[in-house]
Length: 246
Image (tube, rainbow, N blue to C red):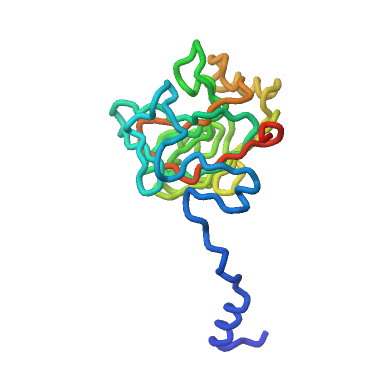
């Protein structure tokens, strides 16, 4: 093959590279025109906690703050819990995307289909969790079904799906009638049937077997877990699917 001189290679690269105009990454916590047309909505605008509340009821704890365009839990291990943060609205069939970041040894989660109902005290007694974790620095990283991106204690994500502590990770989950899927940084980390016998067998084989209301509701709030360790979220976007979008 004939070798091009260095100047020729530079010109070739410029000619073949995509135009940058109009292709810049959108600013955090904003929607593109396409996202708006597809029905996406922001759950966090990067400025305040409007649309969020404490799972136990009332306003969000002071441990949840907005910092540099991110929704941050500032509580440290051993401090008083700030309480899980949940949406004011409920969602059934939907798609959710967000970015998350933990510090070394961090642990948190994203709950969905959760409800605060009589007979329960904690969000995990009803809500399903997508795990948020520093796999390398937290003890749960040694448990395959507890690693980042898992449907907590119920599925095992492929190795290497999560980025190192201190890095932003991009999560996506999609809930449809009879099916749940989760992705982390573009990797499918969970794909399970929901609400049928196969789902109930999966629950019975997990730590949630003693929680009769776990994973039984077709709709509920979306929640961000207070595990007592710092965690940050941003670009939290949701869109309703199918009949629920009407």
